[in-house]
Length: 511
Image 1: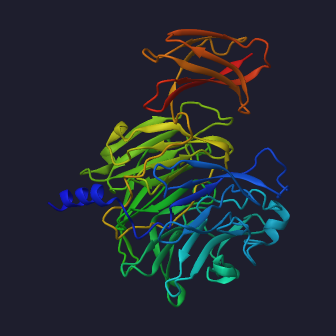
Image 2 (image 1 turned 120 degrees about the vertical axis):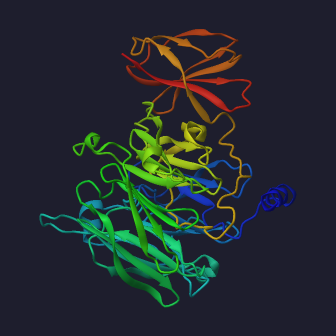
Image 3 (image 1 turned 60 degrees about the horizontal axis):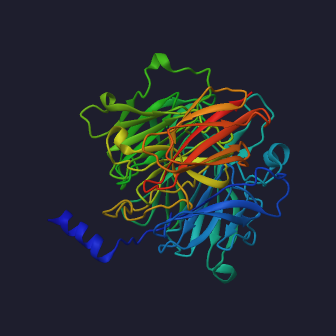
């Protein structure tokens, strides 16, 4: 009866949350312009408050977002501020007073030099509401420390502080770049979860060349160090660092950390004490198949219902059923990278669960599209994973926002009523059969049956359309681009009658 009433109220009264702090995502950078030209950066904004929601392109601010990416909204979903790890921007996309020079120092001056693309590290930054001040926020960020010695650069854990009540409600950075831990940290894996008291926050971070988790409690008194915990896994600098992510489960009872080399590790988590227990190692790949000579970036994310863990490993996406008697026997390959270039390889790098019950998967960086798992609560391929499912006008920096796990105490962990409309055309890519490939410029295209009338478009890797053709209920089409320059081209077919919002595409090589 309880579930029936919940569903009934959902449709009668609509769906609402008291926690919408993660409802606006920002990203993008002007890849074509000079990194030092900071007059205008083209970006995008995904606003999950809108139903249906889509991607707002041509959002402009001073710097791009390449790695560090964090934003925060109020409980109603209105943007308060965001950061790229170099600067803090207010809700109007302007740098806050004292909001520049985040993570500044000798490493930045000698090796990075510009904030044009932001600061590196996709899970190295978090925004945490201050339990002691409803207008205050901790910006937790890892700062690269320059070291010319044999061990090389290492990371410290810093915090800055934002008071959103200042500057007429647009916020000021009142504390900047304060170091609170000098242990050498693994790049990425920075994760936070609300305490059982629903006010304070736990912070977990593994350190480098060790088997230790740093544990912190953020409460009214500030950031408090707690005893270190055993990871039961040695995380080394050469392969563990910067190669994976860590996530708390949506109900807050478990913690998962994954990279291709160390595989998947899952723990129980006690929100009252901050203690990890009942460690389980799950092998996504047989140990004999792990190739440590390759560089494979990956990540981990939970389904909203907490049943499945998704592990991305550069060229493969796996699903693990944590409700199975033995999760090791419930590892499923969902899909393999299909080879699409947009204009660079769109491999599988960073998984992030959205408030709309979908999971988004970003390539490493510089591409115009990302992937999406539309039904992550479903078993196996029923999860409906779509490669290159969302297209941007401007390149994604290989990053999606890093949030603490919100809505842990909500009965519903996400909002299933949010529907998405990405642009006016189509969103979901399916493979198109084109041959021969490569070719001197003459290509034969085999179209899906019953596609009906459609528009065929050929574009170069810069997105410029070089050829267009209307198709009238055809099965076989031929195109001739022999007069165009050698290189890679995208052939896309858009059905005119398209209720499922699907298009068909293939990248070809013109010799």
